[in-house]
Image (cartoon, rainbow, N blue to C red; front, side, top):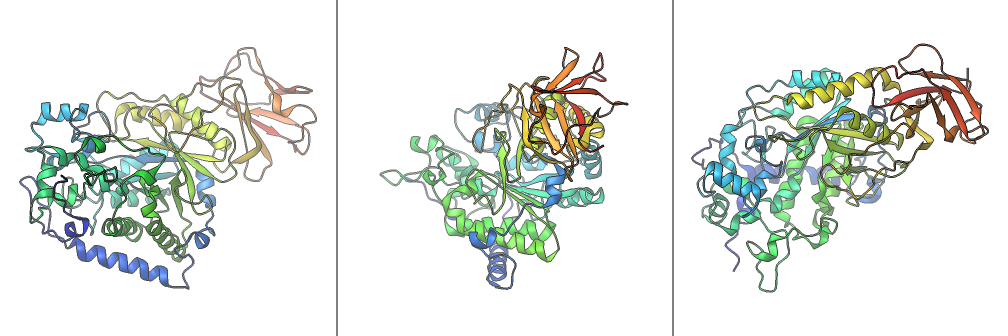
Length: 550
């Protein structure tokens, strides 16, 4: 039989009874959530508001020019999961799955989960070296134009001063409003600021913890519910009920349903959806983000009405502040004309007419910091950026800081190398727009669905792979070779003599970052460039500035 479940509604009324390891201040979460939801629905009911909670109204959205100009942003996965720093950022869930390597590590390192659970990492999350201004300085030097911290991951611990949950970084752990401090530091340097929310998945995140003797099962079965229940709950199942109505702690719940068919997952109830809407819009009210990122589970059909409520509220609130917001979605979670598509560790195979974004991580195996991770090379990320921008996209590159607030040397080095390349070649990236043809070459981008496996977006390009962009006004064409040709010349097939893509013939070619002009010859099979005897530098990509009006 299914063990007793503390419903999401009941969780909202728990008293702030501290656990042995916590000292969270009392908070009337139920009242605050109800007030926030009522506020959102009232604002959306105002027919004078710019947007309303239906897809037809939201179709008036347009991805703003600032985002299309920015091209490159920094994502930040930082939270309590950086304390154990094992395997990946799903540690908070995986440590409660018997047989998972995270479970084995947890038991071997910290003891039984009935004695030491995820909540007990929070006092260890001190962030004593967190310096938001220093972080942003690094991101500026990396060439980023927007910064997006995860405001709350699936683990239920908010990295900001939340009025909806006492489990937040301002009240516990670092005792700092991490999101608020980053917002201030980011905007002080003239960058755009965003937030990421993964709260939707929290509905089922700790469900496996009910199946054995753990602090999750203890919290979810105790009456009255302890404070832990608000961190761990609802702890529902991923799968719908089986024939006997049992959905939690059974073999049927052990396997994750198909991520491409979220309609097959156990849908959240309205109490949880209210919680999600309250937390999501709280971030809008407190930090006025220019950019808002949702993780994949908002595609579960039960979220659709409240997702429309959120989107209307976000867009209308931003309009009142003369902001031009960006909201991203994955896959088919929203209609394509109501927000901006994000493809996690994936890409499109050819140019997309609507702006889009890919997000990937500088570390290969985890979005959050873990020990002994591998790191991407700057060359591979620069090439991915060039390929993405040529197809009308942006690159959001993730960094996972350590629990003490420092950024790993490996990540720092790669970021600075990317920044050095952009300092020279950024004119082909920033403020650019797609050319008629995205590029040429034998290497094809591995395009896939909304979510790809870790490391699967790493590709090897060569000097014959060329990607095109144009200046914002279309007066300059940039051809970026993803390598240096060994034969002393470069043939750009797309720009063959008499091609229909250029208004007038090429009259000048320059190698960005090098003095003088490049000799060129229009031929029936392409535009042939005569190159210097050796590459001017050891770079991942070389930008040629091509003019047709001289």
